[in-house]
View 1 (spheres, rainbow, N blue to C red):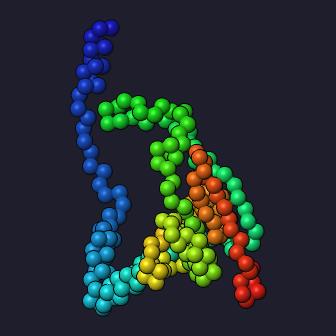
View 2: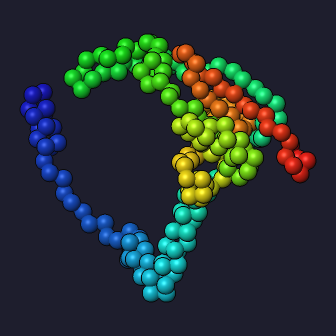
Length: 210
C-alpha cells in the first residue's frame, strides 16, 4: 500500500500541463473618455467664454447679500402680549472632560451652570431690525447700557452705520430656540443662577396691523 500512496502524492505534486483554449469572445478597446480630461476641457471652455468670471461675480454678490441681510429667523412674530419665564442654563456633562495630561477636570454626570464661571453681564435684546418701532423701543430703553442688540431679521451692517452701535444676528435662530422665544422684542437678563426671559408687547403698529 505504501508504494501506491507515494505514487499518488508524486502525481499530485507534478505540474499540470498548460493548454491554450484560444479566444473565447470579442475583446473591445477601452473607449470611455477620461473624466479628468472632460472636466479640464469644460473648465477651459467656461474660462474662454467668460462664463467663469460671471459665475464668480454672481457668487460674490450672493455672499455679500447674505452678509448684509441674512435670512430672517422663521416662525417669530411681533409680541402682542407680555410673557416672562426663567431659563436654567445648567447642563449635565455627558462624558469626562480632561486636561492636556488626561486628568479629569469635570467628571461625567456632573451638573454645570455656565453662569457660575461666565456671568451674563449684558442684556441680550432680540428684535426685528426691519421694524422701526422695535428699534426705537430698544435704543430708547437701553440707550445708556451695553446691551447686545441681536437681530432676527434686518440688515445688521446697515444699522451699525446708521445707529453707530453694534448689532448681531441670530443665525438660523439658534439662540431664540434655545431660550424658547416665540415673539420679539424679547430680552434675556441674568437673575441669580438663572436667566430671566421677557417678551415685551409694544403698542399696535400705526397702520392698524398687530
